[in-house]
Image (cartoon, rainbow, N blue to C red; front, side):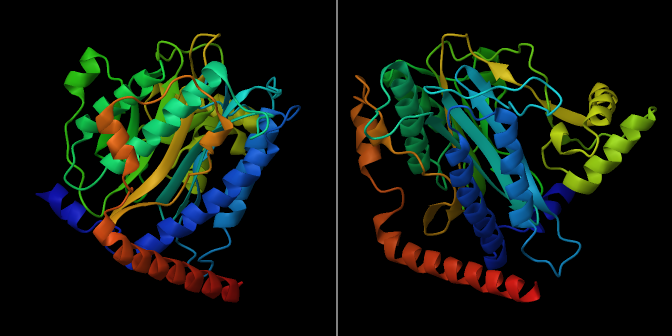
Length: 393
C-alpha cells in the first residue's frame, strides 16, 4: 500500500512541466550528439571525445532553471564511445592508454542528460569516413540496418496495452533477417524521476534463465522508456576483458566506509551525481577516485557498468532513444540521426507482419492532428521556459 501511494505521488508526463523538462533535456542531448558525432574522425582519441561530450552535457544543463538552486540537473549517462566489437560502456580515463579512431571503425556513442531527474538518453552508431558517396557495406551494413530496423519496430510496438515480451520476440526476428543477433540480456528500461533503470523493462535475446526470471508487464500511458537496441554480427554474448570499468551508479545500500579515499569519493559522488550514472574521469582526483570506488563496489554501494566485448572479428551496433507514451501516441524525443541510405546490405526484412508494421506511422493516424497540436504546445512551453531561464541569467 505504501508503494502504491509513493507511485501515486510520483511526477509523470501527465504534467506539462514534466514533459517540458524531458523535452528540454532531449533537445540538448540531440544537439550534443551531433557535435560528438562530428568529432568521431580518423585520428580522434576516444578519451578526448568522451570528455568533450561530458563537458557539453554539464554546461548545457547548467544553463536552465538557474533560480532553483535545489534542482538536480546534469549528466544522466556519461559519454561512452565503444568501437567495433566493444559492446558498451567504454569511457576511458585520462591516466590510461587511449584508443585512436581510424577510417572504417564502427563507433557507438552513448550518452544522456537530465533536468530535475527527468532523463533523456540516446545512442547512435556511425562508421568513420562513411557517407552517401562512400557507402557502408558487408557485415557493418548488415548490423547497422538490423539495429536501426529493430529500433523502428520497437517504436511502433511500445505503446499502452502492449506487452514487453512481444517486443522481445519481434526484435529477435528483425536481427535474424540480417543474419545478426541482439546482444543477450540487454535491457530497455522504464525511465522515472532520478531513475534510469525503472520498474518495467524490455529484454532482448534472453537466455533460458533470463526468460524465466524476466517479469512480464504491459506498457501504460504516461510512462517513459529508454529504448536501447544492441545487435551483433556474432553470437550476441557479451564478455568482460581487460578494460577497466569506469562507469558506476549509486545504490541505496548503507555501509560505513573505512578508507578516507572511499569516503571522499562517496561524498563527491553524492553531491555531483546523486543516483545518476557517472564516470571516474569526472572526479577532481582521478587517482583517488580509482582507489575509493573499490571499497564502494565491494560493499554494494555502487553498481558497475562493465565494459563488454564481442569476439574480435565481430561488430556491434547500438541505437537508443527516449520514448514518451503520450495519450495521443508515442513521442520520440531523442535519436533519429541515422540515415539508412548510407548502407548497402544483401539482406532485408522478409516477414510480412514486420514489413506491414514498418509501413505504418509510429503514431495513430487519427491522433496525428492532436499529436501535432500537442507537440506544438510542448515546443512553445519549452521555448517559454528557455526564454525565462535566459532572462534569469
